Image (cartoon, rainbow, N blue to C red; front, side, top):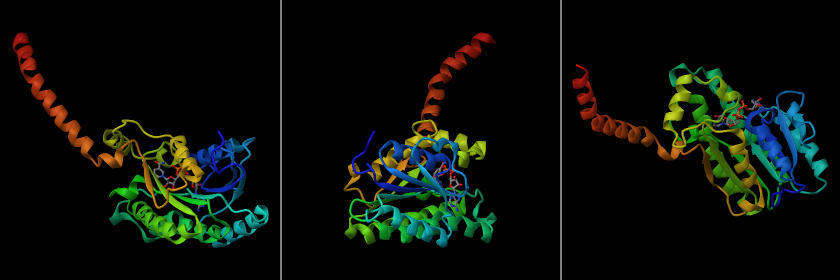
Length: 274
Ligand code: NAD
């Protein structure tokens, strides 16, 4: 369905060869946008065939790649403004603080935090009133998730989001962040099963999320339907960060009360069988 303000407007999505980025690219294209999807592989993913999505290689940590993209888009836009930039590319590194090597710390921050900064620096000059920037954070950006480098990079991205919203607001450019919870993509396929189980136990909706559920919000935030939303951070996590661990407490209290209520019945059954 065509979304207000997206028809014919160019939108760049990073890390779009798979997972949430690909879902965002496809949904934006279906919503009327001219999507430029970028990622590390040279070849476009098969999922983009016939979708209208244009694909190209771009490493978000490379200033030269961003500059090349900015130059090419300036030509293609022919004076029009860029509709949106979605800083979606990200990598995880599941290591605790004491086990995080400097090289891993720097690698994670380069992709998850420096990448969005370079993207904003390169493409904000192509934007104008009605344009927007969307940073893909994480529920790790709202909590003390154990993955030290990843969590720190995503908290940093929140800061960048607020700075950019204040800096570019006067030009009519909106800047927001979304914070996905546990979404089923390549990134989470290798997550320890204990992490998956704990996530389910702590999520009020009691299920994991799908890429399209993040993409729906991304499309809304990039459209004119969100024309007065800027500097916002929106979790897409089934209630995980909102509950803040209290679901575990609530479930424990309910379980304890249930076993207390059941105790007389169990004792009676026990007496009958002995
Ligand atoms: P994914 O691994 O499927 O996709 C990430 C994409 O980023 C990949 O296609 C990868 O090639 C690309 N990428 C990595 N380094 C890059 C670079 N230097 N330049 C360009 N592209 C690069 O994972 P996903 O779940 O789709 O992740 C999308 C975003 O959502 C990430 O920012 C991630 O941190 C965030 N996120 C994911 C989850 C989750 O549960 N899956 C939860 C919270 C936040």
